[in-house]
Length: 291
Image 1 (cartoon, helix red, strand yellow):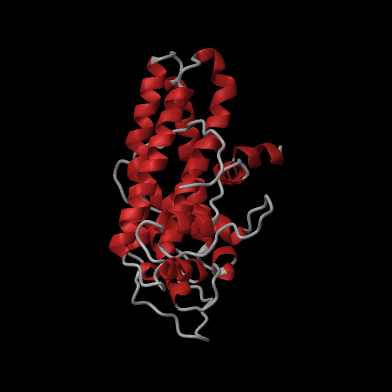
Image 2: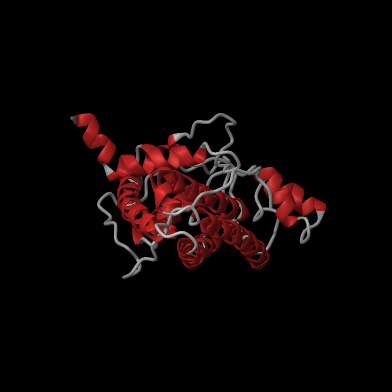
Protein backbone atom coordinates (compact mmCIF):
# COMPACT_ATOMS: atom_id res chain seq x y z
CA UNK A 1 0.00 0.00 0.00
CA UNK A 2 2.80 2.32 0.92
CA UNK A 3 4.50 1.59 -2.37
CA UNK A 4 1.36 2.55 -4.28
CA UNK A 5 1.21 5.88 -2.48
CA UNK A 6 4.83 6.56 -3.32
CA UNK A 7 4.18 5.92 -6.99
CA UNK A 8 1.29 8.40 -6.95
CA UNK A 9 3.28 11.01 -5.03
CA UNK A 10 3.80 14.04 -7.33
CA UNK A 11 7.36 14.55 -6.11
CA UNK A 12 8.30 10.92 -6.78
CA UNK A 13 6.56 11.06 -10.13
CA UNK A 14 8.57 14.07 -11.24
CA UNK A 15 11.91 12.62 -10.16
CA UNK A 16 11.08 9.33 -11.92
CA UNK A 17 10.29 11.15 -15.17
CA UNK A 18 13.41 13.32 -14.86
CA UNK A 19 15.63 10.27 -14.39
CA UNK A 20 13.98 8.45 -17.29
CA UNK A 21 14.41 11.47 -19.57
CA UNK A 22 18.07 11.86 -18.59
CA UNK A 23 18.72 8.32 -19.85
CA UNK A 24 17.28 8.93 -23.32
CA UNK A 25 19.87 8.94 -26.13
CA UNK A 26 20.88 12.43 -27.19
CA UNK A 27 19.48 14.19 -24.13
CA UNK A 28 22.77 14.81 -22.37
CA UNK A 29 24.72 17.67 -23.90
CA UNK A 30 28.51 17.34 -24.00
CA UNK A 31 29.62 20.65 -22.53
CA UNK A 32 32.93 21.00 -24.39
CA UNK A 33 31.50 20.00 -27.78
CA UNK A 34 28.51 22.30 -27.38
CA UNK A 35 30.51 25.36 -26.32
CA UNK A 36 33.02 24.84 -29.11
CA UNK A 37 30.25 24.53 -31.72
CA UNK A 38 28.07 27.34 -30.36
CA UNK A 39 30.90 29.85 -29.97
CA UNK A 40 32.87 28.98 -33.12
CA UNK A 41 31.36 31.72 -35.28
CA UNK A 42 31.65 34.43 -32.67
CA UNK A 43 34.83 33.93 -30.64
CA UNK A 44 38.55 33.42 -31.11
CA UNK A 45 40.14 30.03 -30.49
CA UNK A 46 41.70 31.38 -27.30
CA UNK A 47 38.34 32.60 -26.00
CA UNK A 48 36.75 29.25 -26.79
CA UNK A 49 39.59 27.37 -25.10
CA UNK A 50 39.25 29.43 -21.94
CA UNK A 51 35.45 29.18 -21.99
CA UNK A 52 35.77 25.40 -22.03
CA UNK A 53 38.59 25.14 -19.48
CA UNK A 54 37.04 27.73 -17.18
CA UNK A 55 33.77 29.47 -18.08
CA UNK A 56 32.47 31.77 -20.82
CA UNK A 57 32.40 34.58 -18.25
CA UNK A 58 36.03 33.95 -17.31
CA UNK A 59 36.87 34.09 -21.03
CA UNK A 60 35.45 37.62 -21.13
CA UNK A 61 32.56 36.74 -23.44
CA UNK A 62 29.86 39.36 -23.02
CA UNK A 63 26.34 38.55 -21.90
CA UNK A 64 25.06 40.23 -25.08
CA UNK A 65 26.95 37.73 -27.24
CA UNK A 66 25.89 34.83 -25.04
CA UNK A 67 22.27 35.97 -25.38
CA UNK A 68 22.60 35.82 -29.17
CA UNK A 69 24.03 32.29 -29.03
CA UNK A 70 21.40 31.24 -26.49
CA UNK A 71 18.61 32.51 -28.76
CA UNK A 72 20.02 30.44 -31.61
CA UNK A 73 19.93 27.33 -29.44
CA UNK A 74 16.42 28.09 -28.23
CA UNK A 75 15.18 28.51 -31.81
CA UNK A 76 16.81 25.23 -32.82
CA UNK A 77 15.34 23.23 -29.93
CA UNK A 78 11.91 24.87 -30.27
CA UNK A 79 11.68 24.15 -34.00
CA UNK A 80 12.66 20.53 -33.46
CA UNK A 81 10.36 19.88 -30.53
CA UNK A 82 7.42 21.56 -32.28
CA UNK A 83 7.88 19.45 -35.40
CA UNK A 84 8.16 16.27 -33.39
CA UNK A 85 5.13 17.24 -31.35
CA UNK A 86 3.08 17.62 -34.50
CA UNK A 87 4.28 14.21 -35.69
CA UNK A 88 3.32 12.67 -32.37
CA UNK A 89 -0.22 13.97 -32.82
CA UNK A 90 -0.77 12.03 -36.06
CA UNK A 91 -1.60 8.47 -34.84
CA UNK A 92 -4.84 9.40 -33.11
CA UNK A 93 -6.77 7.91 -30.21
CA UNK A 94 -5.83 4.25 -30.77
CA UNK A 95 -2.16 4.99 -30.11
CA UNK A 96 -2.72 7.05 -26.95
CA UNK A 97 -1.95 4.33 -24.36
CA UNK A 98 1.47 3.81 -25.94
CA UNK A 99 2.37 7.37 -26.88
CA UNK A 100 1.32 9.50 -23.89
CA UNK A 101 3.66 7.99 -21.24
CA UNK A 102 6.60 8.11 -23.65
CA UNK A 103 5.73 11.66 -24.67
CA UNK A 104 6.09 12.86 -21.09
CA UNK A 105 9.62 11.55 -20.56
CA UNK A 106 10.71 12.64 -24.02
CA UNK A 107 9.33 16.16 -23.69
CA UNK A 108 11.19 16.48 -20.42
CA UNK A 109 14.22 15.33 -22.40
CA UNK A 110 13.93 18.42 -24.60
CA UNK A 111 13.60 20.60 -21.51
CA UNK A 112 16.78 19.01 -20.21
CA UNK A 113 18.59 19.72 -23.47
CA UNK A 114 17.86 23.44 -23.48
CA UNK A 115 18.47 23.72 -19.74
CA UNK A 116 21.97 22.25 -20.18
CA UNK A 117 22.79 24.47 -23.16
CA UNK A 118 21.74 27.62 -21.34
CA UNK A 119 23.54 26.58 -18.17
CA UNK A 120 26.82 26.01 -20.02
CA UNK A 121 26.59 29.31 -21.87
CA UNK A 122 25.98 31.21 -18.65
CA UNK A 123 28.94 29.60 -16.86
CA UNK A 124 27.43 26.73 -14.89
CA UNK A 125 29.61 23.60 -14.55
CA UNK A 126 29.17 20.30 -16.38
CA UNK A 127 25.96 18.80 -15.06
CA UNK A 128 26.65 15.30 -16.39
CA UNK A 129 30.40 14.94 -15.98
CA UNK A 130 29.94 11.25 -15.16
CA UNK A 131 29.48 9.22 -18.32
CA UNK A 132 27.26 6.67 -16.54
CA UNK A 133 23.48 6.60 -16.71
CA UNK A 134 23.01 7.78 -13.15
CA UNK A 135 22.34 11.36 -12.05
CA UNK A 136 23.80 12.56 -8.76
CA UNK A 137 21.58 14.23 -6.19
CA UNK A 138 23.06 17.72 -6.62
CA UNK A 139 22.46 17.62 -10.39
CA UNK A 140 18.91 16.37 -9.80
CA UNK A 141 18.39 19.27 -7.44
CA UNK A 142 19.66 22.02 -9.71
CA UNK A 143 17.79 20.64 -12.75
CA UNK A 144 14.60 20.58 -10.70
CA UNK A 145 15.14 24.22 -9.80
CA UNK A 146 15.83 25.08 -13.45
CA UNK A 147 12.50 23.49 -14.38
CA UNK A 148 10.84 25.50 -11.61
CA UNK A 149 12.25 28.68 -13.17
CA UNK A 150 10.91 27.58 -16.55
CA UNK A 151 7.47 27.18 -15.00
CA UNK A 152 7.71 30.65 -13.45
CA UNK A 153 7.98 29.97 -9.72
CA UNK A 154 9.45 32.57 -7.39
CA UNK A 155 10.96 30.08 -4.96
CA UNK A 156 12.88 28.29 -7.72
CA UNK A 157 14.11 31.67 -9.01
CA UNK A 158 15.40 32.59 -5.56
CA UNK A 159 16.99 29.20 -4.96
CA UNK A 160 18.83 29.20 -8.32
CA UNK A 161 20.09 32.68 -7.51
CA UNK A 162 21.39 31.51 -4.13
CA UNK A 163 23.14 28.50 -5.64
CA UNK A 164 24.73 30.76 -8.27
CA UNK A 165 25.83 33.11 -5.52
CA UNK A 166 27.58 30.28 -3.71
CA UNK A 167 29.32 29.18 -6.88
CA UNK A 168 30.42 32.71 -7.75
CA UNK A 169 32.38 32.77 -4.49
CA UNK A 170 34.18 29.48 -4.93
CA UNK A 171 37.01 28.24 -7.10
CA UNK A 172 35.80 24.63 -7.36
CA UNK A 173 34.02 23.90 -10.64
CA UNK A 174 31.15 21.96 -9.15
CA UNK A 175 27.70 22.40 -7.69
CA UNK A 176 27.40 23.06 -3.93
CA UNK A 177 26.57 19.48 -2.97
CA UNK A 178 25.67 20.10 0.67
CA UNK A 179 23.29 22.98 0.04
CA UNK A 180 21.43 21.10 -2.72
CA UNK A 181 21.14 17.74 -0.96
CA UNK A 182 21.09 18.42 2.77
CA UNK A 183 20.97 22.16 3.30
CA UNK A 184 18.07 24.56 3.44
CA UNK A 185 17.87 24.77 -0.36
CA UNK A 186 16.81 21.12 -0.45
CA UNK A 187 13.25 21.80 0.83
CA UNK A 188 12.80 24.17 -2.11
CA UNK A 189 13.93 21.39 -4.46
CA UNK A 190 11.34 19.03 -2.93
CA UNK A 191 8.56 21.62 -3.17
CA UNK A 192 9.49 22.34 -6.77
CA UNK A 193 9.44 18.64 -7.63
CA UNK A 194 6.01 18.19 -6.05
CA UNK A 195 4.61 21.18 -7.92
CA UNK A 196 6.07 20.03 -11.23
CA UNK A 197 4.75 16.52 -10.66
CA UNK A 198 1.20 17.87 -10.28
CA UNK A 199 1.56 19.97 -13.43
CA UNK A 200 2.83 16.99 -15.41
CA UNK A 201 -0.12 14.87 -14.32
CA UNK A 202 -2.56 17.52 -15.53
CA UNK A 203 -0.70 18.11 -18.76
CA UNK A 204 -0.41 14.43 -19.62
CA UNK A 205 -4.21 14.20 -19.62
CA UNK A 206 -4.66 17.44 -21.57
CA UNK A 207 -2.06 16.42 -24.11
CA UNK A 208 -3.72 13.04 -24.59
CA UNK A 209 -7.01 14.74 -25.38
CA UNK A 210 -5.32 17.01 -27.95
CA UNK A 211 -3.98 13.96 -29.77
CA UNK A 212 -7.25 12.04 -29.90
CA UNK A 213 -8.12 13.13 -33.44
CA UNK A 214 -5.48 12.45 -36.14
CA UNK A 215 -4.23 15.41 -38.22
CA UNK A 216 -6.17 17.94 -36.13
CA UNK A 217 -4.34 16.61 -33.10
CA UNK A 218 -1.05 17.12 -34.91
CA UNK A 219 -1.79 20.78 -35.59
CA UNK A 220 -2.94 21.43 -32.03
CA UNK A 221 -0.04 19.52 -30.51
CA UNK A 222 2.60 21.32 -32.56
CA UNK A 223 1.02 24.70 -31.92
CA UNK A 224 0.85 24.13 -28.18
CA UNK A 225 4.51 23.18 -28.09
CA UNK A 226 5.52 26.36 -29.90
CA UNK A 227 3.46 28.52 -27.55
CA UNK A 228 4.71 26.89 -24.34
CA UNK A 229 8.23 25.58 -24.84
CA UNK A 230 9.54 28.85 -26.29
CA UNK A 231 8.50 31.14 -23.41
CA UNK A 232 9.67 28.59 -20.86
CA UNK A 233 13.13 28.44 -22.44
CA UNK A 234 13.28 32.23 -22.66
CA UNK A 235 12.32 32.52 -19.01
CA UNK A 236 15.23 30.34 -17.96
CA UNK A 237 17.61 32.18 -20.29
CA UNK A 238 16.65 35.56 -18.85
CA UNK A 239 17.13 34.37 -15.29
CA UNK A 240 20.51 32.68 -15.86
CA UNK A 241 21.80 35.65 -17.87
CA UNK A 242 21.14 37.97 -14.93
CA UNK A 243 23.08 35.94 -12.37
CA UNK A 244 26.64 36.75 -11.18
CA UNK A 245 28.06 33.64 -12.87
CA UNK A 246 27.35 35.12 -16.31
CA UNK A 247 29.10 38.41 -15.57
CA UNK A 248 32.50 38.62 -17.33
CA UNK A 249 33.74 41.00 -14.62
CA UNK A 250 33.37 38.28 -11.99
CA UNK A 251 36.54 36.56 -10.80
CA UNK A 252 36.49 34.13 -7.91
CA UNK A 253 39.14 34.69 -5.28
CA UNK A 254 41.28 31.61 -4.87
CA UNK A 255 40.64 29.87 -1.58
CA UNK A 256 37.30 31.59 -1.08
CA UNK A 257 35.23 28.42 -1.10
CA UNK A 258 31.70 28.62 0.18
CA UNK A 259 29.44 25.68 0.87
CA UNK A 260 26.95 27.69 2.88
CA UNK A 261 23.23 27.30 3.27
CA UNK A 262 21.68 30.63 2.46
CA UNK A 263 18.05 30.09 1.49
CA UNK A 264 15.51 30.72 4.20
CA UNK A 265 14.23 27.36 5.42
CA UNK A 266 10.59 28.36 5.43
CA UNK A 267 10.53 30.10 2.07
CA UNK A 268 7.18 29.58 0.40
CA UNK A 269 6.75 28.08 -3.05
CA UNK A 270 4.64 30.47 -5.08
CA UNK A 271 4.07 30.68 -8.84
CA UNK A 272 5.48 33.91 -10.23
CA UNK A 273 2.78 34.11 -12.90
CA UNK A 274 -0.91 34.23 -12.12
CA UNK A 275 -1.51 31.94 -15.08
CA UNK A 276 1.24 29.51 -15.98
CA UNK A 277 1.65 28.36 -19.55
CA UNK A 278 0.97 24.63 -19.62
CA UNK A 279 3.94 22.65 -20.85
CA UNK A 280 2.84 19.65 -22.79
CA UNK A 281 4.42 16.34 -23.65
CA UNK A 282 5.96 15.38 -26.95
CA UNK A 283 7.87 12.52 -28.51
CA UNK A 284 11.53 13.28 -29.02
CA UNK A 285 13.55 11.42 -31.58
CA UNK A 286 16.86 10.35 -30.00
CA UNK A 287 19.82 12.19 -31.45
CA UNK A 288 23.45 12.76 -30.84
CA UNK A 289 24.25 16.01 -28.98
CA UNK A 290 24.84 18.82 -31.44
CA UNK A 291 24.27 22.48 -32.08
